[in-house]
Structure formats: C-alpha cells, structure tokens
Picture 1 (cartoon, rainbow, N blue to C red):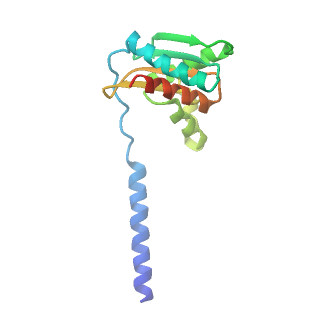
Picture 2: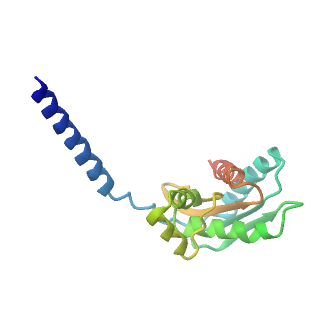
Length: 166
C-alpha cells in the first residue's frame, strides 16, 4: 500500500515537473503587427480621455501620443507639470510603440531581477509604467506616454486615454 502511494506520488511529481518545464519553454506569442497610423481625430479622443483622468486625480501630467511610425501626433503638458516629464512621457510612448507592448511589461520583468536585468540594455525600452500601445483592429496604430505622477498614476492616465478611443 505504501509502495503504491509512493509510486503514485513520484509519478504525479514527475508529471507536474514535466508540465512546468514544457510551459516554461513555450515561447510567448508574437507582438501585434503595426497598422495604419493613428489619425488626428483618434489621437484627440485618446488625449481627451487621458486629460480627464489626470484632472479627476488632480495630477499634472505630460501626455504624448505617437503614431505607429513613432512620430509625434499630439503633446500636452498640463499646467504645473515638471519639465522633465515631457521627455519621460516621450520615452514611454516611444518604448510602447517600438516594442509593441506596455512599458509596465519591462518594469515587471526587471523587478523580477536575474536575467531580466539585461532588458536595461535595450535601446529605447522604458522600464517605467505609463506607456501603452494604442490598438485598432488588433494592430498597433500608435502609443501614449504619460508622466508626472507615480508610475501607477501614469499608467492609470494612459489606460484612460486608450479607453477614450473605444
């Protein structure tokens, strides 16, 4: 009876370990492809959503919207926003469009340490939350970068901007 339990436990452990190794080796899905650049009208909707969220939180923010080619479409620095936030917002927007993923993905990976620290060497990859790709029809049409608050506040404002397009 004890042998059967031990054998069952050993087989179960081996299966769980094998499944974990297989899952760890599964590559992530490819990032979405680029689409046609965001239009000015679309960018205005994104900006309105982001600005409304920043005002709701009483946060002074720099908000930048880039098209799918990384070109600036809109930029706004709210009254009282520190000058340095403009460059930080631009870096976040660039990172989100260039790497087709939220900047929080880099922040989270780097926080885990280890081999993920090599991400700090990626040119243009901002490891601070607040940059999001802007999607339409499953394709990246642009990005938004926000700076001026904590990284969580920046991310909240960026998300509200993206949601403003829907």
